[in-house]
Image (cartoon, rainbow, N blue to C red; front, side):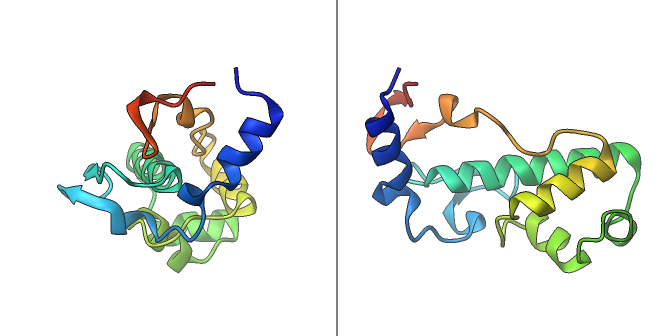
Length: 126
């Protein structure tokens, strides 16, 4: 398990600074099911999983972006951009989406199974 100082350095490290929008890290395939570049930052992996979960919940419930936007008071453009990987939604937006859909959208703990660009020997250690 990483100590507090190690976790702080990891969270504040260069791999989480100045990240581009998630869809910019696509190596092959189509967003959100694409394979990401090997050096994609953790935020890109989170953005991809948020988009996948949001799309799956909307498809399962047969709900449109416009209807979801009305239900949770989030701009339809924000939902669209999240689905396309063009934005990382803030916590307030995620909370509203989860409450409206009744499902978890935020991929808590995803970092445990995501390869680190600075340590390509496997998942991040926790």
